[in-house]
Length: 142
Image (cartoon, rainbow, N blue to C red; front, side, top):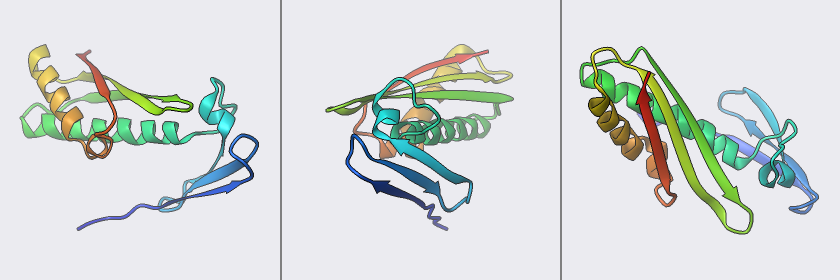
């Protein structure tokens, strides 16, 4: 059965001087402030950006896909920790995503983990949705 999740964005003013909020409507978890500065400068000052939201979605989806793949192969993980770094270049857009994953997987060697990690990168739904972006991976067992 398909599911649909909803978020809404409200923006006021020009790109550079304006501001807005994004709300996570399906979960009701809240509203988050956004500005051009929070997107294009190093210090977001308590505000988020589309890239941070993409990083949250990608790191979560990837962790879930890797966990599922490992369990299906008979080596369920104890832990999977994934960081997604989404790089945004003003005037160019999103220029890349780097996934860093560290996992504890009893009974699995480094080569087996590397193969599972690569498969998850290629097949998690968010990776597929972002296929037009270069996605790199650093995966290791801990």
